[in-house]
Image (tube, rainbow over all chains, first blue to last red; front, side, top):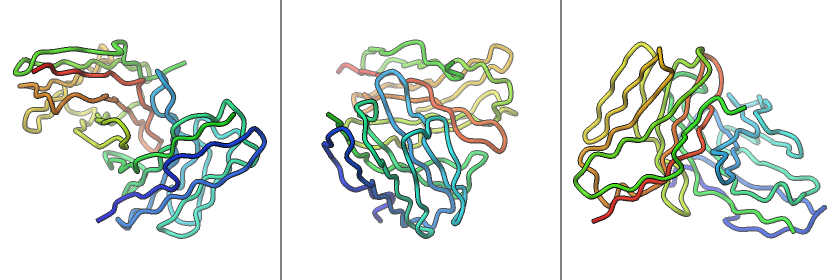
Length: 114
Length: 111
């Protein structure tokens, strides 16, 4: 049981380049999320998809776009990467977006923008 | 302005002793509180949660306490084991809204 799978694990981009981070879950969860983790800042929500066909902005959406491709897959796109987007990115999923429904996280993508 | 704060960036305890990790929050609308544990190069994993209608929840060696009047949450680990060494994040969620995470506390359990 793979849970939440993220690709790639590592990526180095030059300023202005674009890339898409891929995420897939096999737990039949309805909700999916993208977070970034920066030192001392905890995990900050970039975008989320409460259910298939919907997406909403989180706390730090600027510079990112998302696509909920189907129930399993939720991708994050950086159209023009900036050094401020150097971070570790985590995808997560949950049965539902509210209450005690815990998030299940992937192992992260470490992105460096030079 | 961080709504969920973990004021201790690190904590060191001896194996077998109690570890107490603290978390403060400012939003009185938070209804659910969760703790996550994170090992290096892995994603966070869910540990334990508590609803705002309770003041304590236990799961084996882990107990979470909630003091709503003080807007304070704590995680107790008894007894602490070297495998508990990790970064611990507290998180809080108001009804119908998304989780907000604290900055994390790195716990080191020494043999």
